[in-house]
Length: 107
Image (cartoon, rainbow, N blue to C red; front, top):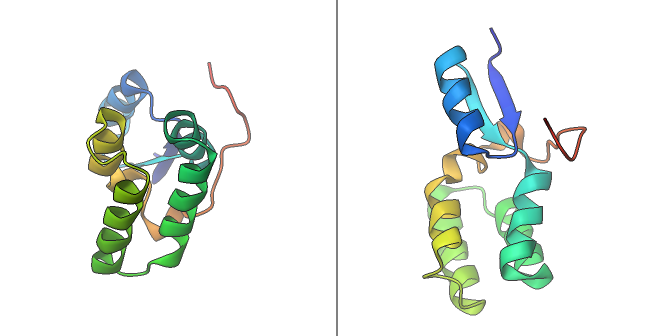
């Protein structure tokens, strides 16, 4: 059984991972995360997000940095931003920081 599974965040895939590998740690691929962030918030927001992820080492510092980021780019109340934040345990963990899947498109 895998300890960690890295995916693009597809909801059906998340459900399948939970069912097939109940003890695995499901994380989101940084490449996909950044592509989606840039797609929704623009390149500058994406750059700001990666800086926020890499800069802060404590939860409280990250929370402050996140608040500054989403306020500055005026995306705080956007649904995708809320979902991204709510899924932060899947992408903010240090164990997977910087890991990207080798393929840009899974099937």
